[in-house]
Image (cartoon, rainbow, N blue to C red):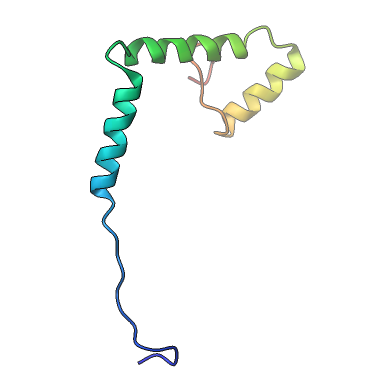
Length: 79
């Protein structure tokens, strides 16, 4: 027995709550949501974000990719 009183195991199973959360997320996305199109849009946005960097920005970007801070993109030499 602990000096603070009896000890007991306490656990909560959130699996049913997680399934409900996923159901609500999918309902909010709606039937027209296209995950492949969403991924393509993210890839296009990433390419645009890291395009036209000046030499110093490109050097820093390359260092961050090499260090694993940023993921390598399809056009990167490290990809």
